[in-house]
Length: 404
Image 1 (cartoon, rainbow, N blue to C red):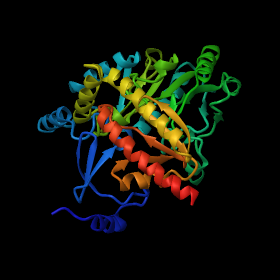
Image 2 (spheres, one colour):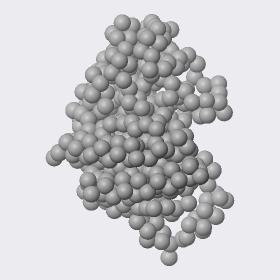
Image 3 (cartoon, rainbow, N blue to C red):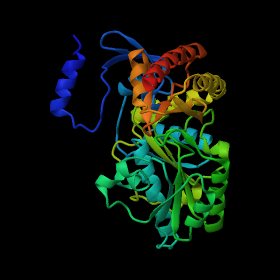
Image 4 (cartoon, helix red, strand yellow):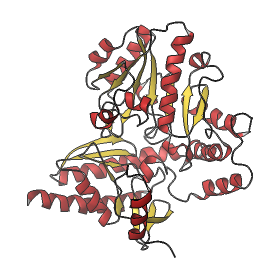
């Protein structure tokens, strides 16, 4: 017999470090775009594990591959060859245009690797004073010390300072500020093509052009943080492609393993030529189980018409959200691309999240007043419409509360 929500909460309160503020629901099963709690209630999942379950829950092909690999060989360490790293890396290269891959275990680890590889590039070039980074206000790259150093929000940073020095933060709305900040001491610019945790804020074309100009003028490397935007989320393999950006390094995570932990730093050939054995490493990164999962996810992304489907569904998603924004006074702005959308509201977005969950819809709060939605890339129009009907009711309830 499965434990109850109260039993699980009691056990965690004694033994699990309290770094998460969990919502009061206990999930035990998933199927496609739906999750089921311990009482059997179904929820439409428009969060997909914060963009991880891009094929939905319990995808049959991924499940079969994981079972097969787990029953064959899961891990041998990076002291030895195995047949799957090269296959996964080849697929990532074909999607990104960058020739090399370093496998790790998460998006944050991928960011750490990119930051290190940028420093190593300039060290190898004997430009040892080139150690600074330029990042973007509102961006989020992770919570490890390096990734946190290029994340601007004081809420995340202040308890752990001093962090890595030499980081300059610029406004995403001011290309001139970026151009002024990048100098011959800048190792790399790091920026998300769409800020995720920062409130689903797409990079403007003017800012993207400024990144390209700054890199051309100074030789600075560009790190595209595509942990949330990458692998089809926007209808493109990577969203830097839609903006004409030319990254030297790309951080990848979340959707890459469909739920199996894996991340990757994608590296251009000119940077790869400056990296040597021992410069970076990982115990678990790129093991057989993770790579097998990644191969399934990447093959699903490139075979058939999934990217076309995301673009079509994304257009419908935008139309439905535009109608909700026009209908509900609590909504102030709609942002996003493809199946990565955010509704900014006048109140704490947690109110909308709670109302939606109580009605059987999962979304989440980011940047305090933004309702973030990252549905599985495979979601049908019918399921999306059902989710929008529930969100309509949730926004209506919040409207009434705001007017009371």
